[in-house]
Length: 483
Image 1 (tube, helix red, strand yellow):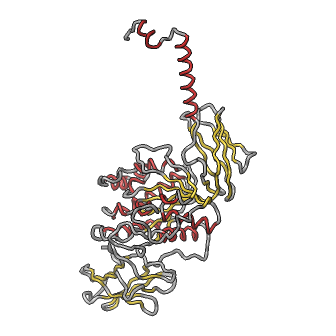
Image 2 (image 1 turned 45 degrees about the vertical axis):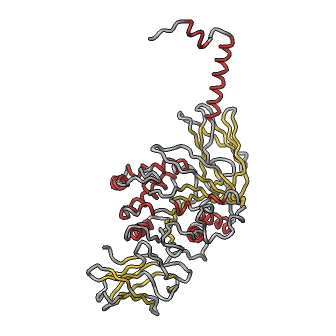
Image 3 (image 1 turned 120 degrees about the horizontal axis):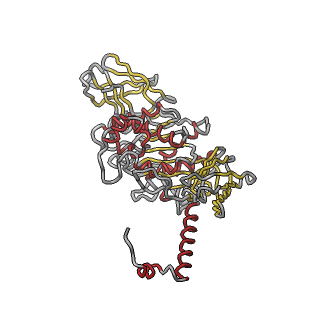
């Protein structure tokens, strides 16, 4: 052990003087007090102006010194005090029952001598919107939006609120996030996802309940980074797929790193469902996407302990993708519909410029998503949000015949039907002529193909549909082959 002379100790700490002792006591007092103040806290998402899910068992949580109790009182039921007991790691949680939609309310948290009040709490519907840049696309993006009109100027709405997270990543699970709840207004709305805004706004208008939209998205990100690590630990095939991802210089691609920082801090928060628009970043290896995407959805539901509805957007046409990679990825996206409580919307017709990966038509994307939710989640029966899709293929002589499952007879917007291809046994596809028959089926042919064996529709990276049902919804891209 190293020894120091008494003189050096006295000169550096001056413990023997009364002032030094008092200073040490004060230092210890303020240190302990600061530690205690820091110890009792709530996560960022449980804060002023929050929206909590209505008529539900909602978890509240935070941090406090072990040995203290946390008392929780909600103004919608002031006679019922809920008690939580911090564990050895100073975490605590408790369940409170929320009433039907309404508010504003206050929630009071007390631990020992410390008290936290959060106010202006609304009870309503909470949705998560996530994905990459086409979900992140906000009103204030420089290239603008074509179908939003004066929505920002008219966006003042105390019943619609947003919680937006910054772009963050981490190799380890994070307990908390950044962000704060903001009330919709011309000042707060510009930075919000356009699709997410119109989704939430429409639920608020149709259901007449407060709506909270949690915005967690990051442009250019791959599905692997959004997936919980537990998914990979239980599926070696998915783990190998995820580890094949090549680095890029605009976003992290390491498995789970974005989930760790931008989703995991939210998993205790009760949500009604999620909307998702992503896939463009995975077109390099589209054959993996279906399994990875399904793994992410199941992983989120397990993490939230909630089999919530999950509605997603099939990626839009763009001529910058490699060959037919986007077509294969769209096909993989569709396989997620095998999971319960999932729905897919098609936006191939909502593209103003196929040379731009970010179409400027975004309000309609949100409306197509919300119609799915209003029909399936909220029981509005007179909506028809389902897209026409391929049913059967048959061939006779030099013509192929396609039947479609749709609401009403299909119609073409334009003089000719676009984006059909046909092939024979040589597997060479040629542009095809298509005709809608009186019975609603579609006849497809090409001079180069004498014996058709396969048909494709909009099965290219940039193919835009011009066949629609009576509700104006486009036919989902398809192929009859598995080549």
